[in-house]
Length: 268
Image (cartoon, rainbow, N blue to C red; front, side, top):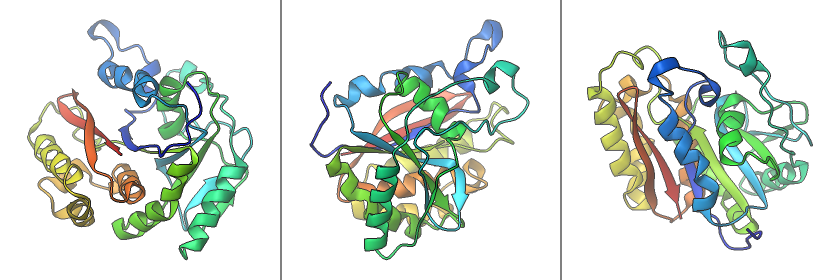
């Protein structure tokens, strides 16, 4: 694949739970296999090699949008009570202080204060899915934090400010989960998750104005707080929706995981 100069699409992916793709779930098999298959085909389906990648993970919030600026970011094993081998996983992807600086320049031009962190590494919302998506770890990658409070309008604005990166060969990815309620994830029930997923797909694939209006009021959606008691795993979608600008959203991944419908989206 050659490096592209055309506008790249933006994506919201579901990244699973903890180090899910590197777990042995026993005779029943890995319930995350469908998600793994989607992520493994991501690069081929994209059809172009990004110059670099900007990832917004559900697992990092800061007072202002903050970007990793480590040239060779370490990994943050921010999960607990998993087998020892999952704390030795590697993803030796290069960072890009240059991309971090360019993103901060765009945010400043939009009047948005930001910061850079030259010491922080990549959390599992990044390295777990990207080990599957881009296993060769060759494309420079920068992580962007969410902002405390998860305000949708604020995150739309962050995304809009960063949208020009899509014309500069940068792949923008929001990494979360379209359903994220750990208290009910394993209860076998589907009704609340189904109601929210149906609403979410309808809003994201609507015209951009309706999409923005719907996501801004997401907490009034059917079963919203049953699907997201806290919106940390939904908030990356706000950033990506802003970066999508006028591009339509398309559902490119829909599956049932532990009896909960899970979705992923492409813009552009």
